[in-house]
Structure formats: structure tokens, C-alpha cells
Image 1 (tube, rainbow over the protein chains, first blue to last red):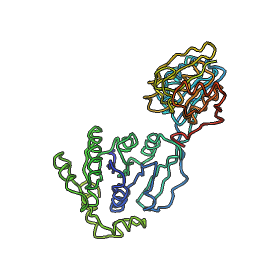
Image 2: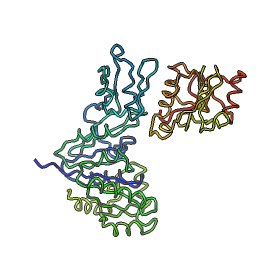
Image 3: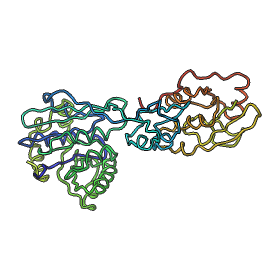
Image 4: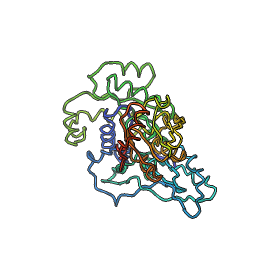
Length: 281
Length: 120
């Protein structure tokens, strides 16, 4: 079975309109589809899509080491090995700083006494929401947890492979974004026509190329700034898939949690055309 | 008894570095014979994370009994506390001045970390 299309919405610069675009694309589609809110440090898609919950949230954990005191010889091999500086050895007793652990499992494998086992550490929750054919999956990282990619990967693995999928990525070009984009069919980069927008767009295009993902650009708030984003896209042969005007009514609708295409039906054709450009419907 | 000082180098007349985890060097002073040695800490100065923890581990391995520095965060403090290394915060400009204050009994050890961590 051929898997359904997976389109990621990313940006580089934060606050350019990723979630706005993802929500309105999801609402413009017909038939069964799913939206994944992968911005797990600040998931907000559900503010605009208050769909009913589908079951209880699922806990996501990562493995961290736990030490068997009776077998540990305090050789310090684990402390010296840990590239993340998450371990210390004091008074023949290993100490773990779980918030620094990347769950690589290296200490467990190399302990000569086999004195280290795994135990789970909860890092966040995955919630499912649905209303008819529209599904929303949300990852929410626990407060104080600094390592998001395992939660984003778990969220991606929870999604149904048979449904067309929109992925609302975190901002930036960090590991979190790479975890959200890997394995997608293409990436839509949302930017604004400002120097900041252009600077981070250039980084995002570079990231998409490093991941061998085709990308196109949506320019939001057209009318502010200058034409350098347009010139960049032309020079780099990156297609501009859509443009959304700078309009106070859009900001007002957003501030009230109202989807754009409901507040401003005149924008519907923009999203319909964008869906067609992305081979979605 | 051995005391560690955070510093950027230069012996006893060198500056007391207010940073602990990312200090470039540590000067270890032995009260027993008034000798001192310096150890490089650039590995931790350049660490992506966990600099305080590993700098504290360094002092544990050097078997010092006290640390004189500017500030100490919660993770480093947890390691130092477990090793019963007393942490004396000090604003002195040089190690020599900090040592004089310590020997005059004018420094008070911390009962907990003096600054917050980067997370939580």
C-alpha cells in the first residue's frame, strides 16, 4: 500500500504563521486527514481546532540508566564515556542527572560489571482529538524537560500512515525541527518579507536541502518589509507557493482563535490553490 | 587540606573567576605546605552541557576539601555536597585575596546552590 502524503509546515523564524497555515490547510481539505502538532514545547493548534478528545492522553517516556549498587565497582567507565556529562561518581556511588541524559544507552552497554539497567523517565504526553474526518494529534513536552525529539518521533509514530498528514513543525532549524521533518514528502516554509524572515528562511532552505526534502515558500504578511525574500526565492529556484496579505483582520481573527478561512472567506481560494500545488485535496 | 579556586590562570596573583563550571583553570592550594598547582579545565569550559557537574567531578578526583569561587549552581552543588566539599562564595579579585579572607575566617560556606540552573 502506498502511504499517504506527508507535508510539513516549517519556518525558520518563529511567529511567521506556521500554525495558521497548517490549520487552514487542514480545514480546507476534504476527506479523512490528520494534523500533527509537533511544536511540543508550545502546542497551540488545538486553540484554533477545539475538537473533542479521542481517549485519554498517552504518556511518552525515554529510558535512563539506573544503577545496581551491589554490582557497581565504581570504576567510573560510565562517567568518562557519557558525552552529555550526565553522570558523576562520588564516594564510589554513581550519580545521574536525568535532565541531561540523551538515552543513548552507551553506559549500559559498556559497564564491565553489567551494573546498569534502564528505567523509564516520562517526558510528555500525546493526545488525540477528532471531529468527523479531521484528526488532530498533539505532543506536549513536560515542563522542565529539555529534550524534545523522542516525543516528536513518538508522535509521528502514533500517526496513521494511511491518512494524508500535515505536520506543524516547531520554529527554527534545531533537532526538534529535523525530527518533525524527517521522512516527509515535502516542506512548506512560511516566512515574512522582512530581513529577519529572509535570514531564517535561508537557514530553513539549507536544512530542507540537507534532508533532501523538496521545499516551497509561503510568504505571509505580504506588503510589509521589502522584496528580498522574493529575490532570494528566484535566485535559489525555490517556488513561491502562496502569498497571504498583511491584513489587520487576520490578526484579529487569530487573536480570537478563529480560523482564517472562516473569518475571511475571501482567502479560501488561496488555500485551495495551495492544496492543489501540494497535490492535496 | 587542599582548597580549589576557580581562575583563568596566573598563580596566586591570578584572578578568582566568578564562574565555577566554566572556569578555564583551577588552582589547588595545599594548606599543609603552602604549595599550589594549576589544572586545566578547558574541556568543561567548552562543554555543550553539564560543565558544572564535570568541574565538580574534577574537584572530587583532585581530593580537595573546599572550593572558593564566585557562584555555584544546583547540579554542581549536588556533586560537591555528596563529596562533602565545602563551597565558599567569594567576590575577591585575586586568589591571594580570597585565600587571605579564608584564612582570616571571613568566608562562610554555602548551605545550598547560590544561583539557579539553566533549566527548571
